Image (cartoon, rainbow, N blue to C red; front, side):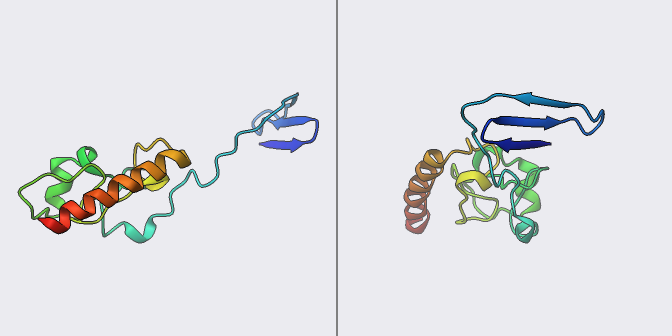
Length: 118
C-alpha cells in the first residue's frame, strides 16, 4: 500500500507491517488498468484478465467458438464479432497510453470503411 504526500511516498508492506519512506519528484499513475468488460463476456473473446482480444491475437479455437462466419481473418483491431473493433486500454496487448489509443482509433475508422465496402 502506498500513501502519497507532498514530501514523498510512504509504503506499507502488508505482510510484515514494515514501513518505508521514499523521496520522489514525480508520480505516474495508471488508473483504469483493470478492464470493465464483464458486459462483453458473451459478445467478444476476452483474455484471462478481461481485455478484448483482436486481430492476430484471436486463436483459431476462439474464432471457431465465436462462429466466425467470414473467409478472411479478423482485421488488426477487429474483435471475434465481425465488424466490431476495439481500441485503446480495453484491448488486450495494447500499449495503454492515450496517444496509442488515439492512433488505434484512427486505424479502426479506416478498417470500418473497409468492412463496409466488403
